Length: 427
Ligand code: PMP
Image (cartoon, rainbow, N blue to C red; front, top):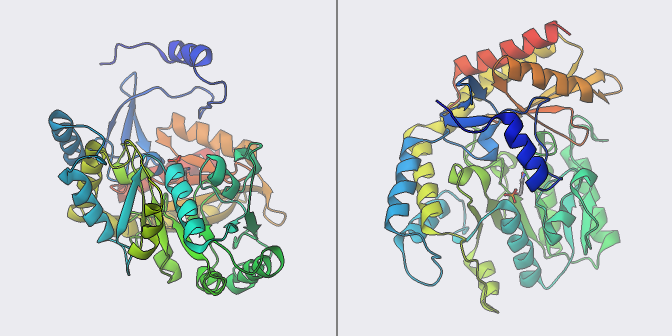
C-alpha cells in the first residue's frame, strides 16, 4: 500500500517548487504510484488502463521484468559515461539497433532525448551539405532546444527563439489539409520552397511519418517518396524522426517511414526505445557520420551503460513477445471498433493512424471540422473516471492520441472503446 503524500500535497509542492510552466492532465490530476504492463495504479490501488504511456515512456509495458533486470544488473555493476572507456553495453545496443535499419544506416550516436537527437541530426546535415536551409512540416514537433524548436511548427510549443534557416512546408494532412489525401500535390510545396525560398540547395528535410504531438496525422500516401526525390536533387539529406512512430508501433512495419516506401539518410529515435530510461539516438551512414570528426563531439550520458542495457532488453522483448505483430493485430481491431463508434456520434470527425498509434479527432461540426476542444477534455476526464487513460494532441487539442504499450490486448481495446462509447452516449 502507498503511504506517501496525497495528490493535494504533491500538487502544492509542485506549485511552490516546480516551474509554473508544467501542466498536468485531468481536472483532478492522477497520482500514479505503480505501473505494470499496460496498467497504472493510483495511490488508492485503483487500476487504470494506460492507453497513452506507450509513447511517453514504455513500448514493452511498464516495469517489464526483462528490462528491469537489465537495468538493475547494469546499475549494480557499473554506471558511467561510456564515451571515454570501453564497455560492451553501448556497442551491443548500437549493433542491435543498426541491424533493425535498412541500407547503410549503421552508425549510431546516442543522446539522452529526442530533442538532442534531432539537434544532432540537423547539425550533421548542415555540416555534411554545407547548406543551412532545413525544411520541416507545419504541425510538426521535433523538440524544444534552439534548433529543433525552429523545426517544430506549432505556435503552442514555440518561444521567441532565433529560427534560422527553417522553412515550414504545407502539411500533407489527409483530414484538414488543402489537397486532401493527394501526397503529390503537397510534395510540390516542398519543391516550391526549394525553388523560391532557398539558393536551390538545402541541408535537409525532416519529418515524422505519423505526426504524434500534431494529433496522429499520417502523411498523405506517396508524399515522402516525391519529397525525398526533390530534397536529394537539391543536395539535401532526408531525416526521419521516428521518436514516436518507430520501434514496431505502427505494426505493419518496424519504422514509420517504411509505410511511405522510403529510406532516409538519418533516423532519430527516443522515448519508447529505453522503456522509460532517458535514451535517444541518431542513426546514419558512415559517410555522413564522418562529419562529426571535424571537431570533438561529446555527450556525457548519451549511451551510458544502464540506458543502453535497457535499450537492448527492449529490442529483445519486442522480438520475443512478437510485439510488432501484436501492434498490427490489436491495432487493426481497435481502429475498426473506433471507426464503428464514429458512425454513432457526429462528434467524431475522423479516426486514423496505424497499429497502436491511433487518433480520434472530435469536431462540433463535421462539415466545418470545428475543433471540439471542451468535449475532448470532458471525454478524457470521464474516461479516466472509468479507468482508461488516453492522451490528446493536435494544434487545437481536439484529437485523442491512443498509443498504449505494445502489449495492449483485444480485451483492453474493447474496454477502451466501451468506455469512450459509454461516455459519448451520456453527453
Ligand atoms: N520528436 C518527436 C516526434 C516527439 O514527439 C518528441 C517529443 N514529444 C521529440 C522529438 C522530442 O523528444 P524529447 O521530449 O525526448 O526531447
